[in-house]
Amino acid sequence: MNNKIEILSAPEKVDMADEWYEFVSLQHFWIKARFNAAKRDSLINSLSNVKLFEIGCGNGLIIRQFESLSGVTVDGCDLNMFALNQIEYTNGRLFCLNIFEKPEALINQYDGILLMDIIEHIPDDNEFLKVSTEYLKNGGLVIINVPALNFLYSKYDQLVGHKRRYTKKMIDDLFAQNQIEKVSIEYWGGSLLIVVLVRKIIIPFISKSKIVQYGIAPPNDKVNYLFDKILRLENRIFRSSILGTSIIAVGKLRK
Image (tube, rainbow, N blue to C red; front, top):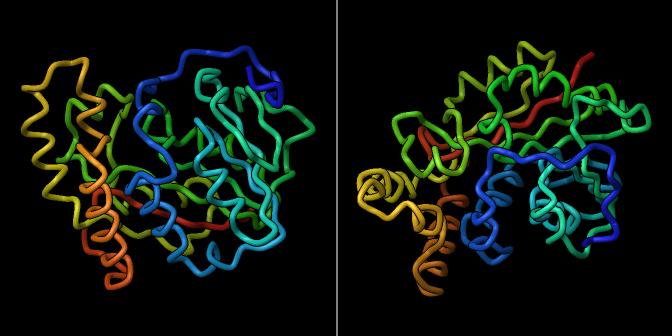
């Protein structure tokens, strides 16, 4: 067990496939691309000497990436002890926490919250976002990543616990309903559109026990390297995509 974890809430089963964590690392092309997409926003790229809170931190990859920025410390919380116990090398605190319990010591304490591929797992994403912002200082950043475009929804999404995929307007509406001033809402991963469509077509013919692996893990290192280079090129050329397989959004809380 990771002795750094502070148990503030009883661990719970979450709507996320544990095996997903077996196939992702800091070297995975998509994990790299998501962070690079976030850094397209100048506010994120220039973060310094701030304290962030990642809600639904999983196995800590986002924490490691954001803590690579100058002076950034990230506290993280999750209810999945399987994922939390995989986290290493973080500067911040780790909590097993149900955010709806609202421990007083954490409310209004953070310069930003990270909701990276989390709200699509939540039945009431609006209420979840509302409670998440209570951990922010006024003017704090809200950084969200979600899967995009519901016509791409597949059995893979279902098995990893996605309730929906999003459009930019859906995120814009969530921001407006929660007193979050939009800074940027952008699609990314347009070069993966064909790949995700093919995945949707093929996955019904894949054994259920292999779907999560097939859906996220590249078949070998060469393919991982190729996708990494393609997404890096896309990120440099297309600062704002018409469509994509994901959405990265940044806002500021105005209480």
